[in-house]
Length: 105
Image (cartoon, rainbow, N blue to C red):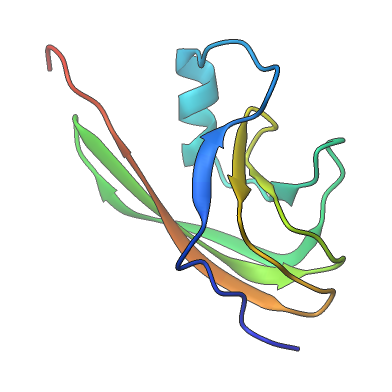
């Protein structure tokens, strides 16, 4: 069991996905888990904590443990992908996703 290194992780839109909708972005704020590309849950003991919540920024802390091995995961929905990581079953994770928006607030 090891702590997964997210220092070089990349957050992007899953290949083949349509542009993000409000619901896709808001999916980050619901307490859900991490999935693989097929939508299968790949974590246990998952928790999600909102660290910042303003009209222009949301920061969300994800923590838990992986139940399988892989190199990517999908937080909250299968539209966004966290890649450039490597994990095995039993590895723990802790990372923050910042969502910033601009416009009329």
